[in-house]
Image 1 (tube, helix red, strand yellow):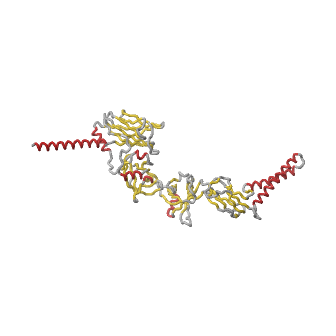
Image 2 (cartoon, one colour; image 1 turned 135 degrees about the vertical axis):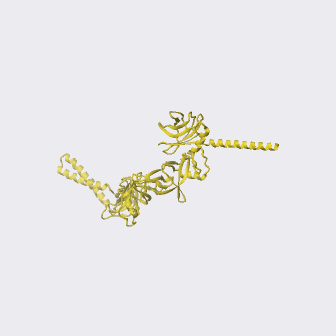
Amino acid sequence: MKKSFLYILLVLTFMACRHDQATHDDEHDHDDVKLFITAYSDSFEVFAEADPFVQGKTSAILAHFTHLEDFKPLQEGKITLSLISGSSGIRQTVDTPVKPGIYQFRLMPETTGMARIVFDIEHAGNNYRIEGGNFRVFADEHDAIHEAEHLMSDHPGAVTFTKEQSWIVDFSTTTVFRESMGTIIKTVGEVLPARGDEITITAQTRGTVNFANTSLYEGTQWQKGEVLLNISGEGLAEGNTTQRYLEARNNFEKTKADFERLSRLAEEQIVSQRELLEAKNDFENARAIFENLSRNFSESGQQVKSPANGYLTQLHVNEGQFVEPGQPIATIAQNKNVVLKAEVQQRYASLLPDLVSANIKTPGGETHTLEDLDGSILSRAKNVNPQSHLLPVHLKINNRHSWVTGSLLDVYLKSSSSESRIVVPNTSLVEEQGNYFVFVQIHPESFEKREVKVGNTDGIQTEILRGLTENERIVSRGALLVKMAAASGDIDPHSGHVH
C-alpha cells in the first residue's frame, strides 16, 4: 500500500513539474510575441516592435527610424508616439534616442477596441507625421497574445538582417514598380574626340623641329599660347623663315625711325605733308608684316603654340625632324566632349529610329544614363560600315569622367515602348549558378530569398518576367550582405537591440 502511495506521489510530482515547465515555456514564448509596425513617409522608414496592446497593461515599444535618403539612422530629433482610439488617445514624447536611430516608448492603453498608431517627428526644424497603422487593444492579455501570434507571418526560411547591421553598410530597399522598357541593344562603343574638341597643329614653314620644352610628351597638359616647339629655317637657301623674320623686323624698325624723324621735322615745317604721309604709309605696312610674323615666328623660326587649353594627345614629329608647310605637328584635345561610336547588328536596323536614350558602363563598373552625362544621340546611320558590316550610332557625351579617346565602353541602346514591365535595380539581383534571386522584405529586419526569372537589362535595371509582383519591397543595395547573413545562419534576431 505504501509502495502504491509512493508511486502516485511521484507521478503527481512529475506531472506538476511538467506543468510548471510547460507554464514557463508558454510564458517564454509569449514574451517573444511582438507586434511588428512598419511604416514609410517620403523621408523616413519606421520599424517598431511592440508588446501586444492590453487595456491597463504597459506595452514596451522599440522603434527604429531610418532616413530614406541614405538608409542611415536618425541621429537626433524629438519623437511623439500616439495611440489614438476615436477622438481620444494616449501619447509619449521622447527627446533623444537610446542609441542612434533607436527610440524607446512605454504606453498603457486606457480603452479597448481599434486604435491608430501615429509617429510625429521633429527634426532639423521640420515636422513629419507617419501613420503606423491600426491595431486592436484587448481586455484580456491571453487574447492579445494569440492575436499577435496570428499576425506574425510564418516564414521559416526568412533571413534576419537587423537595422543595426544595415545602418553600418551600404544598404537600401525599394518598392517594386512598373516602368516602360523597350528593346535593349547591348553593344560596345569606342570613345572618339568630338568635332572641334581636338585640334591638329600644322607647320606653316619649312624647317627643322626643335622642342621648346622637355615635357613635350603625350598626355601632358598645356595652356593656350604656350610654346610647344620651334621650326627653324636656319641654313636653308630658300624659304628661310628666320631670314624673313629678321628682314621684316629690320624694315619695321627702319620705317619707324624714318616716320618718327619726319614727324619732328614736319612740326618745324622742314618737310612736306606728302613726305610725311609716305613715311607713315611705309611704317604701317612694315608694322603689319612684322606683327603678323611675330605672332608665330621669332629669330628661332616658327613658334608652334598650343591653340587652346588641353592635353597633348599625339606628337607627330621628332626632335631634329625636317618638316614641310602643312605637315601635322601635334594634336591638342580639350577633352570637354567626346563622341561614343557604337555599332549594332543589321537585324536591329528597324529599331534605330525608335532609339530614345542609352546607358554607358565604364571600365570601373559604374553605369551612367545618357541624361546624367548631358549627352544626346547624334546620329543613327542608315548605311552599313563597309569594314565591320555593322550600323554605327553616334552619341555625344560631356566628358566629365575624363574618358580616354580610343577606349571601349559597354553601351545599352534603349528603344521606346508603350508597354510597362516590372523592373528592379541590377544591384538587387543575386546570381547563383545561372539562377537569379532577390530578397523580398517581410519587415525591415526580415527578408525572404525568392527566385526570379529575368528579361532585358539596360545596365541599371532588369526586367522581371516571373517571381515578383508590383509594390512588393525588396533589397536594392546590400543584397550580397543579406545573402552572407543567410549563409551564416547564426544571426541573433535582436543583435544590437535595446530592450
